[in-house]
Length: 260
Image 1 (spheres, rainbow, N blue to C red):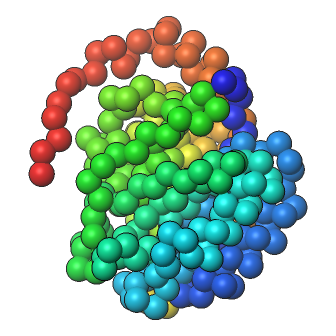
Image 2 (image 1 turned 90 degrees about the vertical axis):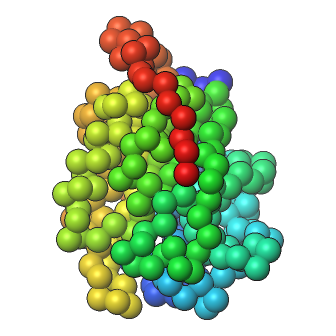
């Protein structure tokens, strides 16, 4: 178990429906990283942007993008995660792929489809929350629109880190900032939020505003508007335990059952 976890997120202007070009961008950025990174976080649909044309970019789990993630994980001896369009049993998923340093894969299918953009019409929704155990840390990865639904993110599993990856437009960026901090505070957890920059094919603009936040809602790292590059912080398990022990807020959480 590691007391400290070094996180790096990459905020990038994704190229529309062009997996090869996006992979090349991230590959170049990652090659220059320090060797002691524990986890690299990429945005939602990092190979394509938030496309409603899954048939143009969909890959299988043994496809080139997931294989590239495994290659990076092994070479850098780090975990890496991000979501991409996956075709599985004749269905399309907005699937988060988490790759461990040895190449082992865990996945999460986005639960809340963004109906405003018609995501529910082309992608199948997931139904299971994923809690990853990595270097003694419990990590809960979620995707974009999931951020608006606090019950789904509720910390009933005593996770230590909540990750949100997104294509969250600038028109609603205040909600992004506010809800990320709310999720950290109410769940007494570190939160990492990685968003994209640039414009997509539909002319939607994205400003990034990626954040790393502690369990009291304080910013540990913040990328400025439209900045392309890295966001990083070293998280402390001991500090998190001390804060939870001192305040004890999670001891008073409500029990509930999620129903469709």
